[in-house]
Amino acid sequence: MAGIFKAYDVRGLYPTQLNEQIARDIGLAFRYLLDDEDRAHGNTVVVSRDMRVHSEPLCEALIDGLLCGGLDVMDIGLATTPMNYFGVGHLQAAGGIQVTASHNPAEYNGLKFSHSEARPVSGDHGIPLLEARVQAQELPPAAHRGSRSRGDVLASYGEHVLSFLDPPAGRRLKVVADAANGMGSLYRPLLEQMDLDLNTLYFELDGSFPNHEANPLKLENLRDLSTRVREVGAGLGVCFDGDADRAAFVDENGTPVGSDLSTALIAGELLKRAPGQPVLFDLRSSRAVGEYILECGGIPVRERVGHSFMKATLRQKNGVFGGELAGHYYFRDNYYADSALLAVVEVVNLLRREGKSLSELVAPIARYAKTPEINFVVEDKQGKIQELAARFDDGQIDYLDGVTVQYEDWWFNVRPSNTEPYLRLVMEAATDKDLAQHRDELFAILGTPVD
Image (cartoon, rainbow, N blue to C red; front, side):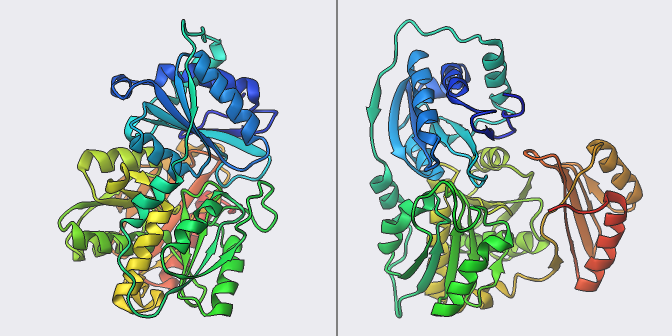
């Protein structure tokens, strides 16, 4: 059980770290995470799972624990994580749990949790309490066992998401979608309802991920998508991750579009309907994102990395939208939760209305030279962060997440990973030459990058 309780979820190797007994214990402990707002929504928890071979037995054990703890369960079966979030809000449930290991390899599994209205359960809002209860075995059964019912939210979710789709105009947009053999496969009928010229890759559910890893952040996992986009002359490519809560886009040339730039484009769309509203972006994003939000009449809000922080701040500020470099897109009109499919809808709306290629729309925002996230194994993470702050103390420094140092013509952020034993670096500069120079300075301090 060591190490499976992460900042945002529970995740580990099956069955050595996470197994049926632990899943049942977590189900028994979940009632202690429910707050007064949750209880006002009743006693029902929405439960669903991904397609991994061990997800079904883990889900059954989890449900048994929830029932034993006196909670009622609405089992919606195979579902994407955004469908679970939507189910919690749409069904006005007390909370939700999705059995998934997201983009991790086949030997992993995990659990993602939410409060009522799809509010996140995280390291700051209950996961340490969950861990303490499970480890101490403080898990008495409830006086009355809960009841179980079965449901399906795909049709309702599709109706919700497609309500944001503008009517098609002119020639049908050709789109290639890659589900990576993950839960995005469930979206085929919804994509088909979008009146696209649709071309699909790897839409067969297979938890062994036989074609490529279900992590669209890694460029090698977009290779097949990019190739197919070029082969068929598509105007857009999209790749979902394993539980389909993230999406990455490629343009008509098969060139990946940074998710921070996608965030800016979608923000521009939404600000046309809701001018003057706050829009969130995580602090790894290009400076161009905040600039573009201002240009579109929005209020840019910079936030630390992580869905729990993004959702909480978006809700607090009543922001219209938020996006992360990892490919999460959060919508006020979706219970402030992430929806990769709704992001696809908004990009399709933009392409249809503007009549321009995606590369043409991205070009004005791609203003700077920028690195992806670069990982370093560092034993003393806080010590290294302090060393960086001292070395670059002539810049504008903040500690919102790790350390960010900003100069007029370049900036960098170094932060400890919430899920892996790394320090992560992102940096941006005015030109490629400047970026290379400052990257060498930082590598000299941080060491050799790792894959």
